[in-house]
Length: 108
Image (cartoon, rainbow, N blue to C red):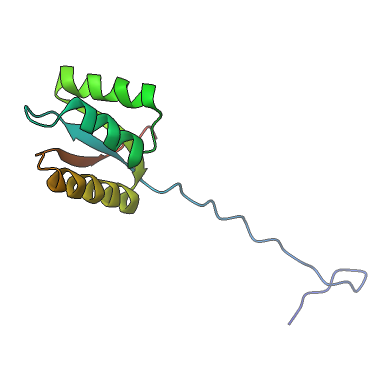
């Protein structure tokens, strides 16, 4: 039954807006090895991770010098897919390139 105000009109109440939470993001980590070529890593970063050439080279060099680097930041499903695609390509080209993922640091 609707509530009526003093003038006979229907009282409406607005529901508080639900805030949608941003989906949790995951870092895709690329690990250095002694066999995968730099050219292959740059190619993968361009093809799978959609990086331009200069960004792909920068990431590859970071991985080469530090042992690990972030290839991208994605939702869980996208991160898992990109890891699977990359490792499949690496296997087809007989490279041991390995990727992992970890949750993005929460800043809340």
